[in-house]
Length: 241
Ligand SMILES: Nc1ncnc2c1ncn2[C@@H]1O[C@H](COP(=O)(O)OP(=O)(O)OP(=O)(O)O)[C@@H](O)[C@H]1O
Image (cartoon, rainbow, N blue to C red; front, side, top):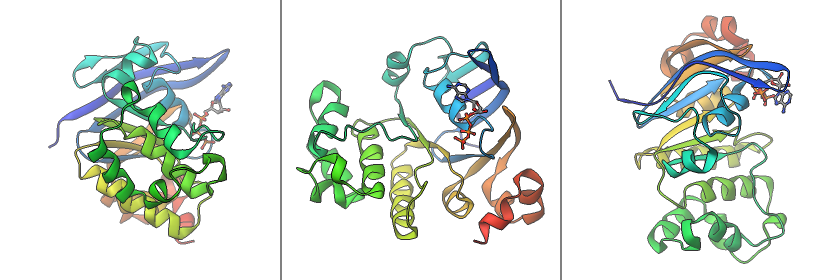
């Protein structure tokens, strides 16, 4: 059994008057990909934003590498080795790819070895190095967004729907890159609606509904059980698209 890298226990998050997370219990084992599934509005993005400190849990605890990070602010949480790739990608479209990367690097200095590895992982980063990030395609922007998150070594990266709206060939490239990232000891917590991608890359899975985790276990077990997919979230139709 791998060690637990991140755990949420009984986490509640309120956004203004709304009670969004209603007691989330989630374990992310070290060294693999955990996929968070669930219908729109289930609370997946809110879970990622609560982990990284963009929302603060009103109840419950979040532990990362044996430290209680529940009340830390976002820079302090990031400083412990967690990166967040938001759904809107968070890139600067007026700046070049190079400038986007420099801004993401600690002290504005990129490790050349790490940068060449990233360019291998995502070839468009190298080929569009001097182009404005605003001119990149949707898939290339998504690659830049993940590349920025990994310019420093991270223990955990939280990625919110990296394949949303992308063509199948780009989804495959993204899946390959995330698989290579996982092989470098980076743990990934991935929100993903595309079940075929999710089941391809996921080791463990948690399914959310109405602000709670309603199922967690091995991904292989869920992928092999269409009845369970249907019961949990009507996934089987999507899986065969
Ligand atoms: N800033 C906000 N203000 C008010 N309600 C919000 C806010 N952000 C999210 N919510 C609500 O919280 C609930 C959970 O949203 P969340 O984005 O976490 O779901 P999700 O599972 O990520 O869904 P999606 O796939 O649509 O992004 C939704 O009902 C949403 O409308």
